[in-house]
Amino acid sequence: MGEYFVTCARMKELEKLSDENGLSYYQMMENAGTCAFTTIMERAQAKAGQRVVVFCGKGNNGGDGFVVARKLCETGLIVTVVLVDGRPQTTDAITNYELLKGMPAQIVDMTEGAGVAVALLKDSEVSPDIVVDAIYGTGFHGNLRPNASTATAYISRYRDRAYALDVPSGLAGDMKDGDPIDEGSAKVCTTITFHAKKPVHLATSAKEYCGEVVTVNIGITEE
Image 1 (tube, rainbow, N blue to C red):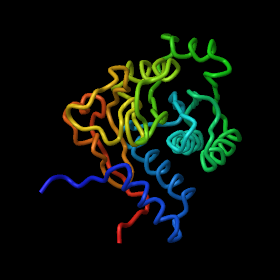
Image 2: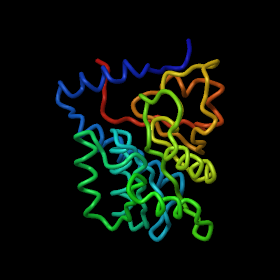
Image 3: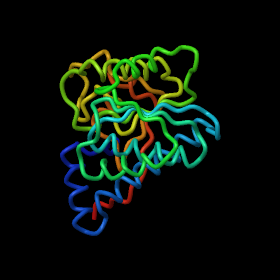
């Protein structure tokens, strides 16, 4: 019997059923971000004063990243959040973005201050202690756009200290061996996936991008 996993469509269905049965989408995001934060803190042996760069997309994966960034700020780490595709567009991600704005985090929008973002990403004098990839989640398909490619190149440069939320950006959640891969996809040391592994986590061709895959419980049950 093979290793347990769920397809991306099944995951969306489970989230919908959970929301209907009292575990809100907002609480799932909070649980996902909190579990990812705890995993990163433990594995990176992180401590106050260390520098973190969190790359966030405009969807719910970015929302998970905002939760992680907020909790890192609360723990005393020096956090820079990079908005890769601009401000968040989903309800819960917007809520968590607003919460983050009250924290001592530097926020850089690549769609507004591209020069600032590029300068940040090319700054070799200050290396980050931790990098978080929360750009694209399981629903990503196709090829990375320029801003995202700049971000994933930075993530991959520090792959020994980089953590992806659910799926390294650039990979499709349902990909399997033999499917095309954007070679610019993020490469990380650890991928933290929520509830269960997705098909991509079992693909041999994706291993060099995903690193070790850690599954965390965000409160979803399948009964």
